Length: 168
Image 1: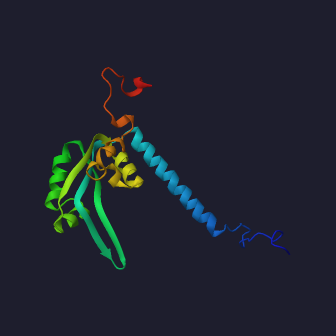
Image 2: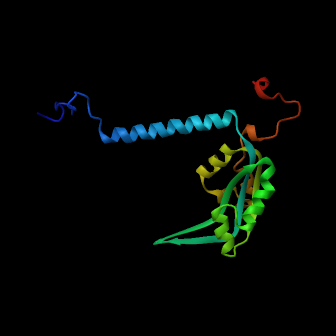
Image 3: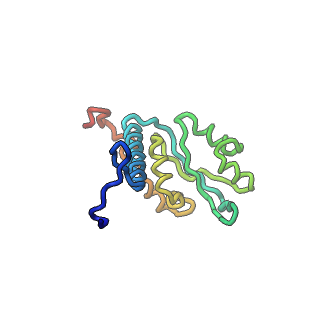
């Protein structure tokens, strides 16, 4: 019997056995579907706040085993009224662990860029995109201000522009 004419692998109750690669493909498809639903829900009713980029004065070098990583930027999100409090937490060493480690190493930090009235999905998108140094005006110069421009939902509306369903 050749491979092309081989009988399919059946369980005792006559069900077909799926190859392992199909299970991995199904898991990836399920994860993609959940991600799409989550992103859609965030776009329909986004909790808005402030997305900010913190730039360290010099790169922090972390050595883990035989690997060496350098970190210089941190992207974060906070609610509308909490921006000053959140930056104070970072400076005090009680904010994000990465900033705590950077400041403990004696490296100064600066808030390099701020996106106001942005949903948390915008922060996730920027983090997934990577290359935060390209968004930093301290590291990339004025050209960085032309990168990472938020979509229309994060830009201020023109005076007299319709809002909500009337905008359609």
